[in-house]
Length: 436
Image (tube, rainbow, N blue to C red; front, side, top):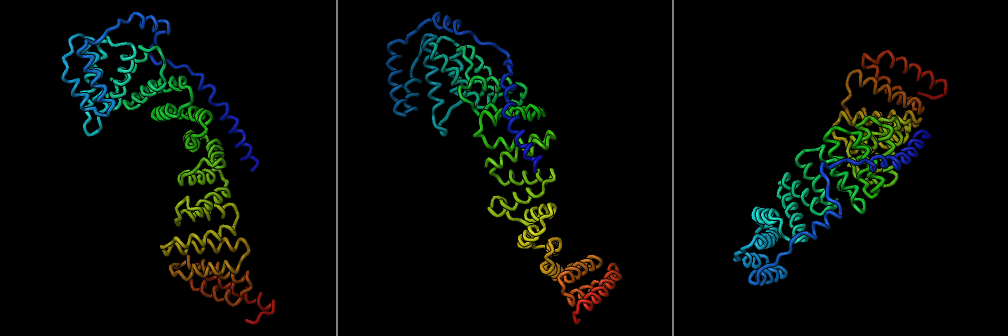
């Protein structure tokens, strides 16, 4: 137990420091963006344009419909227009594209919206604010419609147009690369997003872990999760995931330490998490804790009450030499056992556990129940009667002990031993003044 406690303390310290190297990583996304001075100069040099009076009045009318949630009416007004200049085509196209993109799902026309927005931004004649918003909307719509390569190109144009490393845009580019299975490309964009979020955001971490997993780079996936659980401690699911990744990387001590920390902190909430922790305790040869965790969550209803789950808890206590607790848990095992063979084995194991805890009367009761199931045959039946006889003997129930040994003597595999035991039991009873 001292070793486990020390490991847990060490794990906390290591996790607190582990994310520092990962945060410091500077990975290129493959292109640069202009400086603030360059963007300002571009804005100042961008020509101003205005709509003609006729189009301006129609746009006001369409906007009024839009604000009143009358999107189709707004579209009808704009569709009736005949823009003449490039600016008018870009402006009306951008407005129409926005309208088509905002239609409800039943009436949606994403193809039309994409076409209009793509043509509008291609003219690169809108005001700075309108061009910026149009690029972002176009990229989002392309991503939504699973045009991932187009979305990446559009978002790149957006970043280079604005001169800002927009964290949400970087995340969407990483997500598009993930959909395209460009796992190596996911990493720099997700990392760049993490660096530029004002407050930590879970989404790029999820992409990073997924990308490293797909690349079979478990050590780097672990580093991301180590960073994540420190930066975003409220993401409690990451703790169990981190433990699983440690196990995949054959770092079993760290896996158990991490899961134990998460469990003590209340971060494990699913049946699968509890059962995995039980498995890790068993693998690490800490069976007592395996039994305690399994029993607790079976009793609470967090883990399904099945024969195999209760049997796992009983075996853990048995291995931990907590024989009394093991025997008590076998009461639950038999409740969920329908198969006669398994039922006989459960009663027999319970009898062994009671015998090892020196509760021989209860051991005899369990062995008798195993006999009463009626499926034991041959040598197996002989050995079962032998166990029953020994339990009765140790409980000083000599008549029952002799009867059991006589039954055991009916089987060739146990005949000689049973007959010897029967003689010994009679001698012991006589010596102790018991009249048989």
